[in-house]
Every structure is written in C-alpha cells, then in structure tokens.
Length: 390
Image (cartoon, rainbow, N blue to C red; front, side):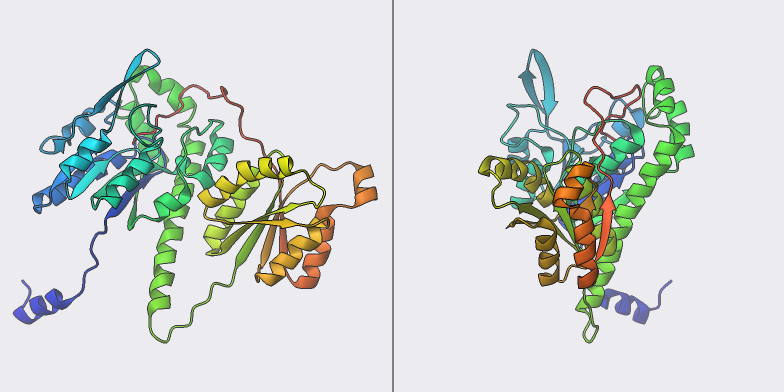
C-alpha cells in the first residue's frame, strides 16, 4: 500500500488526457481493432463517460458481437442503392444524440451514395469532432494513402479504400493492435476471422505468412514514426534543448505513369527521416495549360494527402529549376522517378536525371532515383482478399 506522502505526490503528477481523437491501427483484418475499440468504450462507460456506438462492424464474429453488450448503439441508417439495401452510420442521429464519446469503426470506409453529406467515413468522424464529440476509431495500415501502393505490390491486391495520412496523424493517440503472422493464421484456421468456406483461399492468398510479416512491419514502422515524433516534440518543448529538422526531401513529379508511386515512396522516406516533403512539378514555358491542369488534378491532391507541400515552377530547364528550388529551401534530398527516354532523346536534349545529379552534386544535395511502378490493374484481386474490418 502507498504511504500517504506517496499518494499525495502521485496526485500532484500531471497526467495528459486521453485526447478527443483516438485511432486503433492494425496490420490486417482480424487483429482485434474493433474489439479494442469496444473494450475502450466500455472502460470509459464504467468511469461515467457518456459513450455510444456510432458504427461497429462485427463481420459475423461472435466474440466481437458479444462486446457490444452493455453499450448504447445508435440505429444504423438503411439506404437503397442500385437495387440493394445497405446500412451506414447515421451521422445526423449521432450528432443529435451528442454523446461525449462516439465509437466509429472502419475510418477508411466509403459511404454509400445518398447516405449523408460526406463521401468518406473519415469526413463523418471530423464532423463529430467539430461538434465537440470525441471519437475512437479503427483503420488498417493498408488503407493509408502513402502505404497503399506498397501493399498492392506486396499482396497483388488493389487497395480501393484509402484515407489521407494527415487524417490519421491528426489523432491525439494512435495505438497499434498487434498480432504475429502465426497467431493470425491460427485465428483464421479456428474460424475467428472469416467463415470456414473462405479460410483456404485466404490462407493461400492475402493471409500468406510473407504478406502478413510485411504488413506487420509497415504498421510497426508507421507507429514507431509517430512515437518518435512525439518524443522529438517533447524534447523541442524542453527549455534549453536545441532542436532542428535537418532533413528536407523534394520529390519531382511529372505526368508519367507511376509518378504517384514515386510520391508515396518519397512520403515514406520523409516520414522516417522526420523530414519536410516538397512535391515539385516543373512546367515548361511552352507546355499547354491543359497538360499542366491534368498533372495538377492528378497529383496535387495526392501531395496533400501524404502531407507534402505542392509547388509548381515554370522553367525550360527542369533539372536546373529543381536544384535551384532545393537550394532556396535547404532541401537535403531529391527524389526522382526513373525514365525510359530513348537514346536519341538523351543525345539531343540530355537526360534530366543526369543533369540533376550533376547540379545537385555542386549544391551538396543527395539524389535518389526511384523505379516507377504501376498499380495492379482493377479486377486483378485474387481469392482471399480481406475485408476492411478488424
């Protein structure tokens, strides 16, 4: 038992509140994110907090459904779309109920058209936060915009539902719900994730050991990046502690296929290096406005989603313009996508990459050349592809 003076000392310690926005992050479906969210909701309910379930997806899992007992569930909104009836979170009902905390599963979910004012569930979550309602939610690492293309290459499964990185990074707390590959496969065999009829295809497809190990590493790295960021922020706030973000990364974008993958790769590099990300598009002086607008429409939103700063430059010499921009903004690393220029093009106009390398060497800036990879074509999803829930 603590002595009285120890109890007083403990009471004087400042404890940071849990925050208004909490995300449970997992590597794949079935790790237990929804269960963790519901368990946290029950803990808060037992402490006297007004908690409701805005939306929880059980996927028919008995253990998950059992955790709903004792929690108030806001009735779902039933929406007819293309001859079928779907159930969505009733955003207006949750707002009208005005709980202190709302539990909202599957942050990356795309809402059925006609179900409410927002296309994505993360937008619904922000509407709740803006109304003063705290939110606890879940998401799989595969749905993060900067990671989705890597997951597609690893698994061969298209990631159709995505959430901007900045949405998750805005959370007050990100908690990893972790599970080893072997444990997940055992849970799959025991029927705790998918129906028995789907288990063989899943184990031989998306839930192969190699896939699970890779996805777990991506999730661990993302959370580790966030944890280190919190540590650095704490150190920077300490009096007398010097702090400076030394690394700054520039990624050059064009309209070439695979540029999106290059941007996402650069975003991951920037996150791990705690670096600012500059996404720069050089428009030739004689380039048509239509071409520039096409590139802007495709890539500017992606740059914002991965937390980058979008900049357009007008210049005939792209290589010199990129390095000059890097020098002005103290960029330490430049990321370029590989090209497939013909030998004749290189002889007559020169290789942009070679010239960037030459100019960057004089400016003391490192250069990375990243292979452009196209995403798997739609409809190539193999058997055993996962649902979003966990």
